[in-house]
Image (tube, one colour):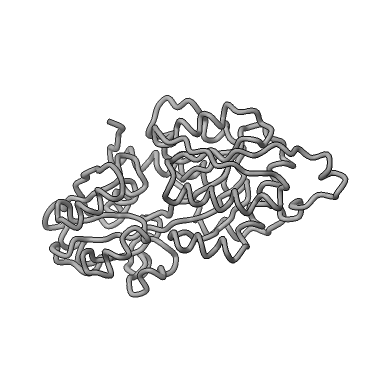
Amino acid sequence: MILIPRRAVLGAPLALAAPALLPATARAQADTRPIRLIVTVAPGGAVDLTARVLAQHMTGPMQRQFLVENRPGANGVIAAEAVVKAPPDGTVLVVAPREVFGVNPVLYAPLPYDAERGFAPIGIATTGHYVLVANPGLGVTTLAELVALARRREIPYGSTGIGSMPHLNTEAFARDAGIRLLHVPYRGTGPAATATVAGDVGLLVTTAQSVATLVQEGRLVALGVGSPVRLPQFPNVPTLAEAGIAPNSLMPNYFALAAPAGTPAPLIARLNAAMRQALQVPELIERLRGGGLTAEPSSPEELQAIIAADIRHFGELMRVANIRRE
């Protein structure tokens, strides 16, 4: 199994930035219809935030109005299917997290969309990193102490549902650390964090932003972060690599743009260039940072390669951990 490190593929040249602006004569003949960004979740949260800041700041480079449309449900399947079936003219795009492209094809069968062939990837826009936290009553303050305890007794952990990134990341961490943990799914980040604070479960993998205050108040203990460098929310918490555990154990979630398959390549290039240009706006960067996100744009080719690698990675992980949709 070959994994493509997230940052390894993000160093490609920004060759696609050139088509951001067209000559005035071409612009006059360009399509002026609004572009609809179909979001896979309800308003609020990282996916929705990514869509709304892009809608605001891609309008200028594209000379088109962007409209955000939330279509939650079925782990993103409803929104993804709507975009796959839309005309490939660039007027309907999807803003979706990693699960929609790399997890759903393995977790759900059959799917009404093909994650590898049904989309024309535009690129990753933003990234959110995860942190492993524990209830203080567990009595551990480091990953080494956690691993030692888990080898003596089974520890329950919470997640935001079967097949979610927190679920899969925790199972990957347990695999790489050589331990077994007991999965307890909840309906969302809030209930899972509440259960961890209450001691109903001992562990939780979640976004850094969602538990930063709880850690600062001492209601949860941060043990490790799944990022290449320490996170600003937890400057004293080591990365997995620093703790001697495979960095890919807590893979970040990405939030990406894609169009229906068959969308003309020049239009995909323009959209990617507009996205990159938007993600350089200081106001946008600060707004994303406030939501626990970083601007880490990729090319269409990089996103396509990551989707293919994710499907292999999560497929193998689910097989080994016997993870199935209920």
